[in-house]
Image (cartoon, rainbow, N blue to C red; front, side):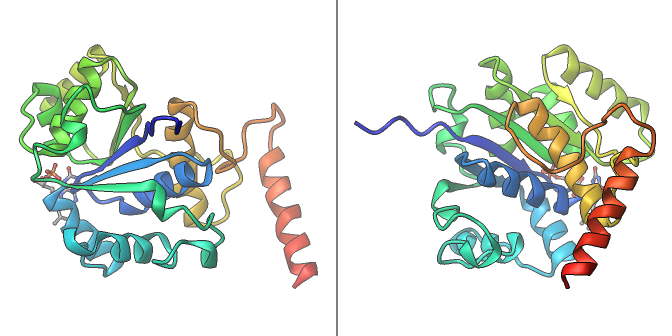
Length: 234
Ligand SMILES: Cc1cc2nc3c(=O)[nH]c(=O)nc-3n(C[C@H](O)[C@H](O)[C@H](O)COP(=O)(O)O)c2cc1C
């Protein structure tokens, strides 16, 4: 008998920061996890703006493959497990009858990444105006882990109050604030730092960033040594 599929749900809302979503999805798939993906209507605009990819419900597999840098047939071309895309289920944001809209649908939890201030408000107030918000509400009511990754800056008092409500309700508010102590030498490493912190909250193992070793400058020296080794091998 097959073990029941129990995915992590990734909700991508329409805030700037789609690379954070891509890094979280990649990290979950790399760890062998199943992923259910919900992309809000506004997120199609941010994906288009930030990647040039027009994300389509009917062609989500090809569009996701392009976004994550995989081949649509599987993923091995970009170093992914061959079955990586087979472990993704996609649900249209307007489909309020979709599996994740019910607490009885098996799921481990959810990350809303990036989280727009509108989705922060909608989740905090329980509006459930689309599948992303409904799924986040379900995740909270089922007491499953919910990570919300706002990107906006500066923040209004209203958004700050919504974020406190989310924290009160049991969500982890994890702002997209990359740290500079992990030796990042490029933008992707900064993105991966935030994605790694999301996976830490979900308890999913990863090597997306260098952890603090207790030694000042340690990560910077390790990054420089890695770069020198890479240059020597090239
Ligand atoms: C290119 C682009 C970038 C945006 N960036 C942000 C952002 O960084 N933060 C934010 O809260 N909203 C941002 N917005 C506005 C949201 O998309 C808008 O509030 C939308 O209603 C959010 O809907 P959703 O939460 O259902 O995805 C952006 C919109 C566009 C088109």
